[in-house]
Image (cartoon, rainbow, N blue to C red):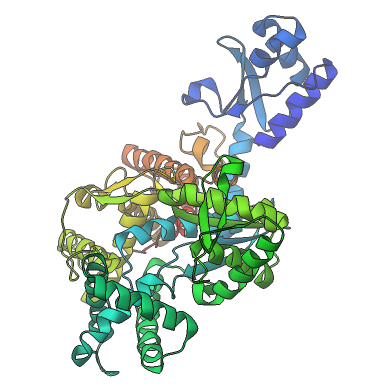
Length: 571
């Protein structure tokens, strides 16, 4: 509808010889001011040589010569806004569209010719999947699904640091305690705990013991060269254990990656790119290392190859860009990392622009903030890191306490508790603009009322229970017509907006816009539910109210799916 109004206004402007005016179309916060408000007369008054009210009157007159049946009227408000009021027929057709399109409702084909690769989560084998990794995972998955909902062909990539100093620290730690090395038939939990404690020990000794530091540096060289069989065997075991444990959490979080890319694969590619750049004068030698002088672009200098000839993260990221381009001929590559890497990527992108301008042009960087706990502390088997699995376990425990009165068998209760937990965590992350820090509050996050993921999930199950009741009374007729005396509800004035919310959410790279919309739908539905009896076999309006309820269930289900939040059937 927004696009249709834009066309109507542009045609009116053309008739008034004012076709170049840029204007915005928004939804008024107060429904009494219409369904859309347009500022065209305010921003175009100077060019027209009239005051905003006069220009608004001229545009209104042009519009009224050819108003479609979807628009009931146009009014002038305030300093010169044009307020559009949609017709009852529009809202009836909008409901039909929701119930007819079902799982496809809200989607569009705007990006049908686009191929986009999203790189996110980016865990490092030999280190823990900690709560900070939940941020890029939730944001990346939501953006990937938003792109798909806009018609793009999407691939998901997970770039993992399986080589480098952190790996050497972990393997040095493993070597110090080989007698405790888990056996093949030990549990994955035991294996991951051993890795975690090995890394923690290696990292601490690297900082305070010069001999240990030198040994770790030597291990790093041997791992890169693959020259030591004992180290290679420990490396193989540790990497396998890490990846297995990560996969369990990916399944819990609802993420499936198309590509698992590793630093060990990109290192040689990146090294070659840097060496080529050195010959071209793009990179320079500095104290035997090869660096990129970022100062020439207002940035800072970074090392791309060490004095020992080893590629740094910077070089590997250049190799990664080339590798992704080879694997998937994409139109856009979206990289999602922590805020702290913003300046780092500015230098990498500057080097990329000189070495691979065509790849730099289609690469985008989105950052996220910290995930913090309002409670300050929580349990952690590793002592120094709060793992994602321990956070999930703690939230599941609290959710099950809230569900203690529910008449569910234990297996189903476990499934629901996990779905609610994932919803609580992801919602807490996605309700904020990417880039902002998140404070996770246990109690607020699992509330079934208000600003939370479980509130959205509960609203959906409430709508399903209404539909189940209506089905029992044979009141489900999705083709029922709007009653002649029907008064359009505030709920209907929100439901039709989902397609434009999905479009805007991806264009702005802002999943929080979809979150806000679903909260508005839920709040209006719960008010709708509380103020009348939806299912009433003696009320001629009941069947139409059931259609509205069906639309609500469809929209919340589709929206939660795009956000990567599970949709339980009962709670």
